[in-house]
Length: 474
Ligand code: NAD
Figure 1 (cartoon, rainbow, N blue to C red):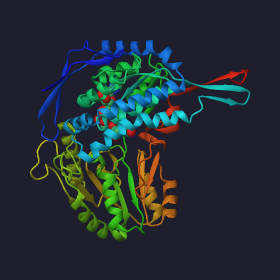
Figure 2 (cartoon, rainbow, N blue to C red):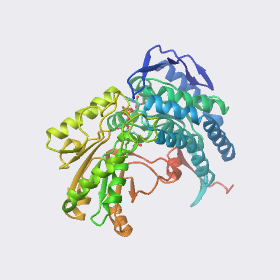
Figure 3 (cartoon, helix red, strand yellow):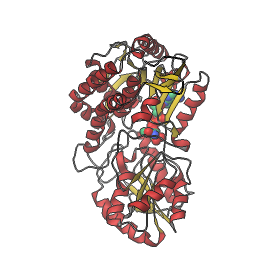
């Protein structure tokens, strides 16, 4: 039984004031493998105070000092990559290939932030003034469970690059992964108080971070409902907010697409991270005249989609993170059937021979955009095949959603695909399966969020311009 008894502040692992113990489950079996002791409001205030003490010094650090620290943090994460991979698989159930990507992504965040800072002018001449980009202050970082290490490291890296100090509240369901990340970062020997981490509940630790007047900014990744609550609560102290929220992403397959290539790409976008992805392409739009062909190609492509042991290299879909998440996905599948959608593959229950929190990868056809399964974020491997008559209708259906995080377009004609991409309401549009680029802004429009992460835009989110009129050039 793994016991996580300490939180992290002022450069040390400390016993929290909070005493609640929270069970950690292996989602592949449902068994409890560990327990974490949660911090409370008092712990959160102490962590914020530590970050506040560290701010004056770090906010005045030079670009070179920040870049050097980011490189040390990267190296420290590299040294613990194998342990992190293990924790991701045990605690989250990500299939090994995905888990390896996640561990590498977390570690590389520090290099990405260092590169961005290297090329960024923290002091600029604008008009008659010298404009200094100053760190916004002490930042609260609140993260979800679906890529724990990645969210912690990416937000932390850019905040430190900007000269901010931070308090992190990771998902309480990810404490084993957080522990590995923390041990790695601690080994890098950063100045005390730069980053402080409090495991705890959202309505306790998260709420205190959101309300506390010593926090200048919140960067939150999680559900739209909690994001709205944070935005409301943050208004009292006029905190800056970056909100990375939910999605209901469309994958628009144009009528000229080769389905033998397009459908596997669409399933990959939909089933990524076992469907527990804000960017999951969960609405697949195909021309009505080619629906039968799309269903046939889907059935063939599903031959390569396998739910199973996350440690097996052939597995592409892991379990849901928790019993609650398992039940949520079951409810949505039931609602799809009740609404009259046709089950092309999958359905309710566990896949054959699997227990734990595994669900059956499910594809519905005959889905209309007014059905609940087409409107609400399911956050599991459940996809909707939908039809359109012409390109204009495809764009209109794709945009008929309260969300706007990431969209996908697939076509054999890149010029046409780009023209369609320009008309989609989303923070990012991926054309023909283009890979992730960490220098490119990421974030949503509409109710998928506010602000951007990654690259220059991600760095600017932790900075505020200060204009010195009449200042002599440096
Ligand atoms: P969640 O909103 O339930 O929780 C996210 C974090 O917020 C957790 O650490 C939680 O403890 C904390 N929290 C809960 N209540 C809070 C409160 N009142 N005040 C402050 N903090 C609080 O989300 P989740 O279930 O952990 O993650 C899944 C959701 O995250 C999905 O909706 C998904 O789309 C979204 N997500 C978005 C992105 C993105 O980049 N846009 C990425 C990953 C996940």
